[in-house]
Amino acid sequence: MAASDSRHEWPGASLARVPYWVYQDEPNYRAELRRIFEGPTWSYVCLESDVEKPGDYRTTFVGEMPIIVVRGAAGEIHAFENRCAHRGALIALDDGGSTGSHFQCVYHAWTYDLQGSLVGIAFEKGSNGRGGMPDSFCKADHGPRKFRTATLCGLVFASLSAEAPPLEEYLGTEVLGRVRRVLHKPVRVMGRFVQALPNNWKLYVENVKDTYHASLLHTFFGTFRITRLTQGGGVLVSPDGGHHTSTTIARADDAQSTAYREQGIRSEKERYRLADPSLLDAVDEFGDSIQLQILTVFPGFVLQQIHNCLAVRQVLPKGPDAMELSWTYIGFADDTPEMRRRRLKQSNLVGPAGYVSMEDGCVGGFVQRGVAAASEQLSVVNMGGEGAESQDTRATEASVRGFWKAYRRYMGE
Amino acid sequence: MLAERVSQLNAEYARAIDDDRLEQWPEFFTDPCLYKITSADNYRRGLEAGLVYADSRGMLKDRVVALREANIFERQAYRHLVGLPAIRSGANGAVHAETPFLVVRVMRDGTMDLFATGRYVDTMVDEGGALRFRERLVVCDSSRVDTLLAIPL
Image (tube, rainbow over all chains, first blue to last red; front, side):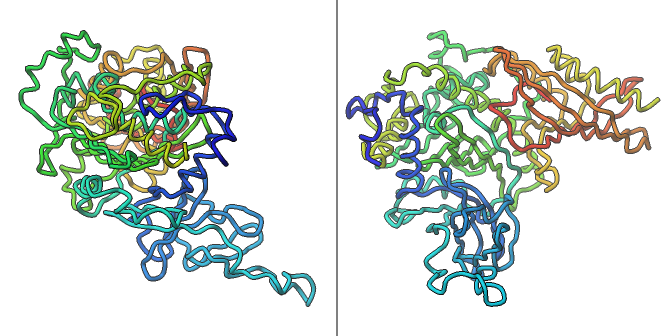
């Protein structure tokens, strides 16, 4: 569908202005699913450890497309649409499990191998010489759509498009290095939660990329000096704009900074101290003084390191004004009991009840509701200028503009 | 009667939260303790992480102070309906019980939603005549949380 199918137009080339209809418009949303999620991008779908042995599978989504990710007989990972070639029913109904060597649709027992190829049709030759499929029906011509898959540091990504560059090239060397920095050894799942958010998926992705808001909206951060814009760090934006990494680096002179107090910003509450500071008993496990690293891969993947609290988040669009955020809390397979406990305590910082992420659950809804009658009005994304290049400050919206740079390219705007 | 004491404790606990007397909430626990909100799926699979994880009364107090002073969320309230406790044993001074609950969340604009259902998996002990939670695992039936979880369950 061409952009002209939508009655809405982008106001100009600037990345610093975003029209609000992009969060509301149904035809635009459908176009996003096709051009971005089903287009030449890579979507995170599960952990390699979720599909450890041949026949192990998980079901998830790429955009709104239900998919099955499964480990093949030779250890390779396949992904294909979770849709029977016959009448379109879901092939697998559970979140995951082990299927042996085949999947079978419950509706009419059509059978698929682990690559997603249709291999069996119940009563294909009919019964007692009557009925059955026509001789001209070729099973190889029918089947759910198949994805390319790629693994990186225990993460599984999938792409429906032959046009997407290889995953590592898609990410670029800098972002790739930041993934490898965190996921440098086998991980272990510590828990999974889903958060239903009352907003367009892009509002959440922008929020994650928005380094400017972190210490202003999340007063817990500022108050306990977990991160502040006056600390060291910066934002790295991939050359195509789509991926980013923001970092916060421990810096001793931060205690002297008065920038927040001078501006009278709400997050400066000096007398606020923890009764049990063991929550923030963090260790520098990566040996580089980076306290926080938030990384996104376009369109909807987040890798989070907040002190020793590690998680991957998957953004799943559910219509123009709803989405789900799928959280997987992780540690490493070789964690000591002390490290495990430390991660459990620090997990209070994140997730739907997180001290520093709770607000991200509602702020997208505040925008969605706020712009209800403003589809032709424009959002201002001007902190740090107009460009989408890496910057050595977090008082910038460069990575948000990077998102729009990539978005507009995929959408052909 | 033990069942009556457990029911009374559950009733007071729910009232303290629903009446917005969160400052009293940590007093329902021993120190140290374990308070964790998780899902039935994580619980069944032995996955340890919680939406909220507190192992001291101090951590519970910090949660309340953060809600009062730091965290931003729209004004909302809960109504807990707490079922009958199934008491597993009363040996060695510790009481184990499982109690179903249902929580309706009422938003500032009047929207009422069934926010959570599940069971409390509790270990309680008597401390100087008062029954307190040494462990309260809030095992939600669903793994999905709508928008955010601010007020404790």
